[in-house]
Image (tube, rainbow, N blue to C red; front, side):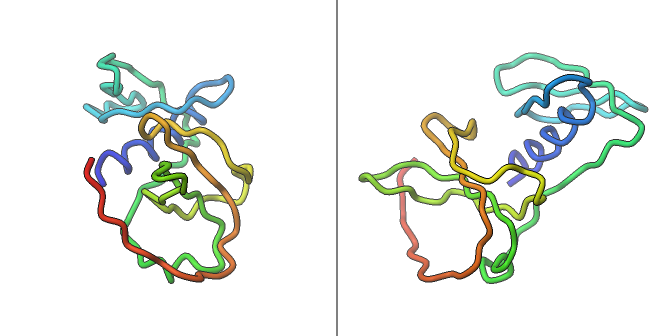
Length: 129
């Protein structure tokens, strides 16, 4: 869960801190010094990100699926036996574009953003990673 929280924070930081097209950075926050965030990226690079004065930060927390009903969500999934299996579900801001796209959580993962109007059925799947 810590890695997910860092990824969400870094996505917000990258979007606000870089005065160019938003970038997603996954890694571990190693230090915060005044307006600079130091990050060890997933590929081992040491990055220093200048934080904008009006930066917004998001964090992740555990929630029951029922709490997300009626919310705008992003579902990270992987394919297993021809079906998409959810790995993570996040409440996300409505400005995030809806749709289905490749994602960088792990090789072969995807993200689907949409309104969660109803929960039909939840099936737990035990997987070997």
